Length: 388
Ligand code: UD1
Ligand code: UDP
Image 1: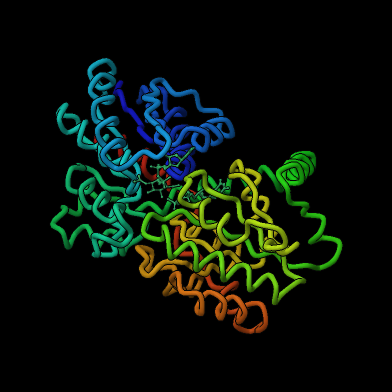
Image 2: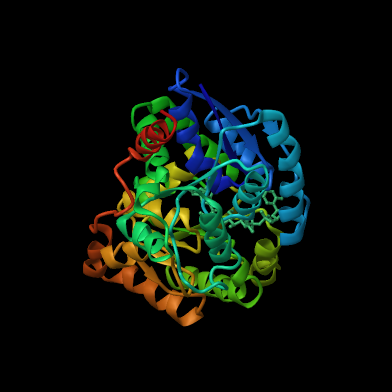
């Protein structure tokens, strides 16, 4: 029996690691599976733990309001010292490019415990874009023994950095496993779908507006550090002007809890008469409600990583409010388009998709390169081979 530990701390890592926790737990004859959450996110992490019914074995509970990168790195590193000494795992699995992942990988290395990196090999090759994620994933990749690359391109990136082919498995992205399980749950349970619609209504957006009147929905999310300040102000100004120009379209923006994301919203939309009636700011949604809403969206405007992988799986064109992407497969497949945080580009590209059915159809019908929903099974099989 081998002891393995999955470590994660933010909302997207939790969504992408949740199906892997259950995949390992269904091999209880081979693996004793423990979960350590860092709590880098608190409320947004707990929302995911709740949906997937995960009770962590360890919780470092590190989040502080306004934490910076030094806070997160040092608190995870020190917290993991105690957890690793107590749990003594044979391998630690971390995910992607957050500071939780890199600090946990470093902590495991200090304990001489091998690290497996899930969602490995994504690169922009610009260490400041996205910041600090590009450096985080490069460092984690350097520490890791095993690498689970979502696509052949991410495998090639790792090989170009000297990683041996036998230590890499191309698995697809586990987010597609998570998304599939959730869309199946929603699609097969009318009561659940009704409850999600009611939840959204309570959160401030009534999806019946769409069903009843043929209105279209533009779903918006944003949180990247490099967009703080001017970038978010441009995004908000673009949203405001688009909403005024298209009164038949609803713009729904579940706001990340980071205060840097909320400030520009108050600046642009605060004050009497500043917020058009077809713009809805709501609190971060639980994953099931978010997927329910994404299924109803016409277009997604985001700077998120995970949503660039999910939305195309639902046939939704994505305009990415970033200058670079570590997901060029999606660009090539035509499912996403980069618009940066430039006011003119955001408004022009959104208008094009709203006004030109052909441009819309081209993006909506492209195929999603991020997997077939069996990434977790491949990861477990690989780990079984490593621990015969
Ligand atoms: C983090 C990750 C980023 C990832 C993103 C996903 C790092 C450096 N950044 O960025 O890679 O894409 O999560 O969303 O690892 N907050 C709350 N409650 C929550 C979550 C956040 O109040 O549940 C607020 C707190 O004030 C916190 C702040 O948001 O201090 C920033 O959180 P942090 O995890 O440091 O950065 P994110 O921008 O969320
Ligand atoms: N998401 C969610 N509720 C929301 C907004 C997003 O559950 O209100 C999900 C989304 O479906 C995706 C993940 O959160 O799986 C993306 O998280 P985020 O954009 O914060 O991080 P990134 O992927 O950029 O690291």
